[in-house]
Image (tube, rainbow, N blue to C red):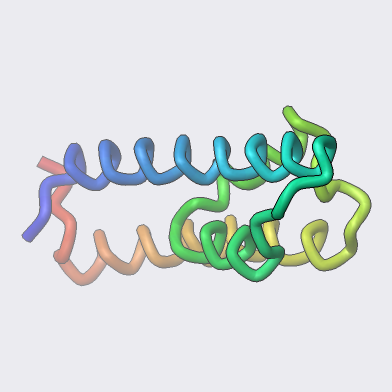
Length: 96
């Protein structure tokens, strides 16, 4: 069993990393440098980094017009919440 505190710390760190990836990709786009692939950005959102992806999209104004991101990131948020609920429900993560 995993304590909820460890899950929160992990999710916080992972979402910060995901958020920063959107910022790095935006900067690389401005400088016409090699970019982070869209697949990587969406995968990070799906792998429990959806809040960081959403915040990164809005803060950096990056990928906000792409329908792929406008659909996948909110779906990733719903999926991530579902995963957390299932982890708690099945006792993988304990609230105490």
